[in-house]
Image 1: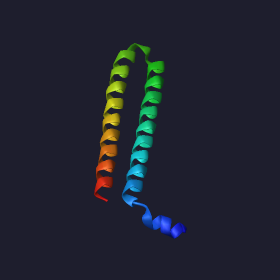
Image 2: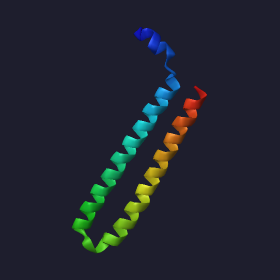
Image 3: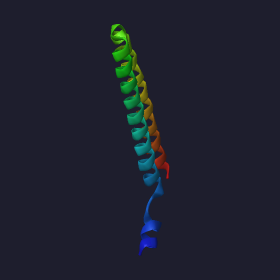
Image 4: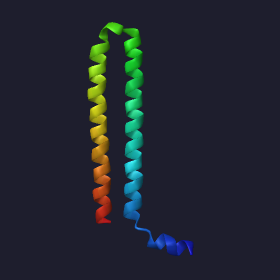
Length: 81
């Protein structure tokens, strides 16, 4: 019963789901680390807060772009499986 179920699973979709999940978790961890470092930097040098905020937003946008690209690639690959 279980082996028949495993034989019927399309592993491309499972791999795409796992890959997309890992990409999202990685992006979340990266953005969390950026926010933590930015908060610490602003606490140490409040006069540089505007520069730090701008760099933080740009960096978070780049990370989100890479995550979106990874999810799209996972979905494209799952369609070929």
